[in-house]
Amino acid sequence: MMSSLSVILPVYNEEKNLPIIFQKLKEVLEQLEIDWEVIFVNDGSNDASGKELEKILQDDNKVKVVNLARNYGQTQALAAGIDNAKGEIIVTIDADLQNDPQDIPRLIKKLDEGYDLVSGWRFDRQDDLLLKKIPSFIANRISRAITKIDLHDLGCSLKAYRREVFDSIEFHGEIHRFLPIWAMINGAKISEIKVKHYKRKFGKSKYGLSRVVNVVLDMFVLIFMWKFINKPIYVFGGAGIALLGGSGMVGGFIIIRKLFFNGVWVSPLLFIFVILSTMGIQFILMGILADLIIRLYYGAKAKKRYCIKTVLKKKD
Ligand code: UDP
Ligand code: MG
Image (cartoon, rainbow, N blue to C red):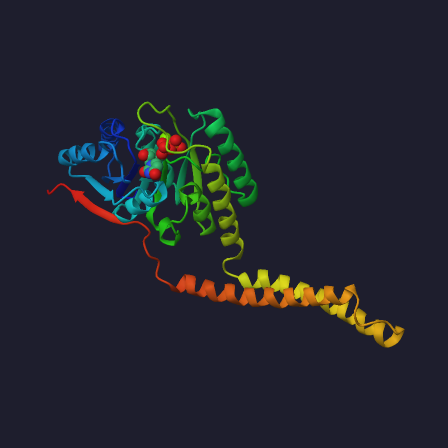
């Protein structure tokens, strides 16, 4: 049994939800025989969320509030929460009351069976069909087909992790939806349990249909990183060698035609030869460049992409 837990909630304009979600969380966490903390990351809210969080903070010394300098989006809010968390187990949950804190003990229990990540599955999702459920269903299907990951609901925020999972994940783009896939790429053992889901009562959803474009683009990056990041020279260089091979055959044909069949040097084939050989060389050089860049990528010390204004905690 692991002994410390950090629950992380990204908060962007959730003033009405905050007191309720904290009350519900507290009821659940106090039942656990585990050392816990709750971290609210205020992602540049411009409603009264900041004030509400200060009230909660006065109330309880197991709460930490991380105020970001502006609105960075859910991914960076989670990153800031995780960087400030002490727990061996990290649980992420939305602040908008759409997830149920009652599900947390089950997630942790499953994690304790030897998993590195346990994801919630909103099997009875209470969201808009056209804007949310259908795009999500398609995205989940595609992800499953490509990665063979055995999860139904990547986008569910309610998840439990062993903290080590985050050591090798870079928080980039809107990667919070793909965390299980990154974890899987890095060798994590992953499981899923059904969780409850409710309609949003207070406040507004922060995502519309435009998120679909971002999801598709993030997916391209993900597939590239997954398949090729450790060997870009093989990808580009392989294509380069194939092109050079083609140009060699065309060139050989031109020479033989000239020498033995009294043909011409200059014909459309010569242009094809020039194009293929130039592209082949370019591809190989690109592969070498990509290889150098990857070395830099791993060598450079990752910088944080968010800026914290204050970290608050009640004095004991
Ligand atoms: N959120 C955030 N920063 C943002 C957008 C959202 O911290 O820029 C938080 C938000 O307050 C909520 C969670 O991320 O706690 C999920 O957002 P939302 O409920 O809008 O997403 P949906 O459930 O509609 O997909
Ligand atoms: Mg929500």
